[in-house]
Each structure stands twice: as C-alpha cells, then as structure tokens.
Length: 99
Image (cartoon, rainbow, N blue to C red):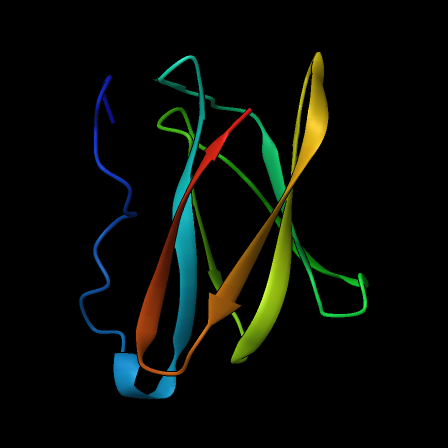
C-alpha cells in the first residue's frame, strides 16, 4: 500500500463471508503505513485472543466471532492505542488506526 491507500486487506476471494466475521484495516502514523506494528484482538472482557503483525503496508486482518472487540495496537516508540470494533457475521469491519 502506498501513501493514501484505502483501508482493506488482500483479496477475500474464496472466503464465504456469509459465515465469517472479518476485522481488517491499516495502521498509520502521519498518514503513512506502519509496518512492523502488532495488533492484538481482545475480547469483551479484555482477554487476549489473537495477535498479528502488520506488513510493510500497515495492513492486518482477523477472522473473529460476532461481537464487540478491542484492537490494541503496539508499535515501537508509540504508546499503545485501543480501538473498539464490532464484528458481525457476513460483514467486514474496516478500521483505520492512527498511532
């Protein structure tokens, strides 16, 4: 992803979205993608569920159960950022996280 690219991950071709809840997005700082950050998926009680690193494009993706989640973004020399997101079956929740 280059500067100004839209939120969204790689293709979901072949994924049956009718049976999936998808949370995906991009981590940016000053409008530029942040590669090498980590995005944690925390459940409604704050319990750790999963973690993925962002690629050079700052993108990440989770397949999650429907419900309310917290994304905790961790990057070097940047304070953690928590972002609430709702996942629904058959939907793609797109998130842009500014750190």
